[in-house]
Length: 176
Ligand SMILES: O=P(O)(O)OP(=O)(O)OP(=O)(O)OC[C@H]1O[C@@H](n2cnc3c(O)ncnc32)[C@H](O)[C@@H]1O
Ligand SMILES: [Mg+2]
Image (cartoon, rainbow, N blue to C red; front, side, top):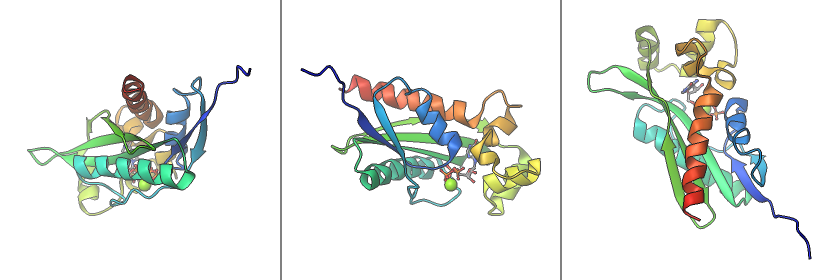
């Protein structure tokens, strides 16, 4: 008789290292084989509402699961949402799906987008591009992200998405 435990395949619907590490770090002791998939979000590159961002996360999770023929799929999506007064908030969503079609959702930290960045977003620029120009660097979205820049690096993009991942996985465990 074998004592070996079986690994489940968890497909992560992105190749962005900030998001991939946000999934791998909290789940490192769980029995998962991780596969990264460049999954389409099915929404705009820069989601502009809570609902669009949430839908992007669900679409990515489902596409990753299908593509990798995995047991579980996870999607993480960043966007902005408008408040009643017209200002913008950074918003972030995650979704976990299983092969039976069940879906778990969680959203993360919301933080105001500074006025000058909001103006650039309203002109149609993508947040990642605006952040890169601001820092005069490339690929800030794969590292600290906008949330890092807006919090003096007290919260990184990975930390923020990790909390979403923990909330997703906890809900999934409770449902088993
Ligand atoms: O490869 P993917 O997974 O698409 O990674 P991404 O960085 O493009 O991530 P999203 O599509 O989820 O994010 C939408 C846009 O918001 C940007 N962004 C950067 N930092 C962010 C943050 O902390 N929160 C939300 N969005 C952020 C991101 O670069 C995109 O322009
Ligand atoms: Mg993107």
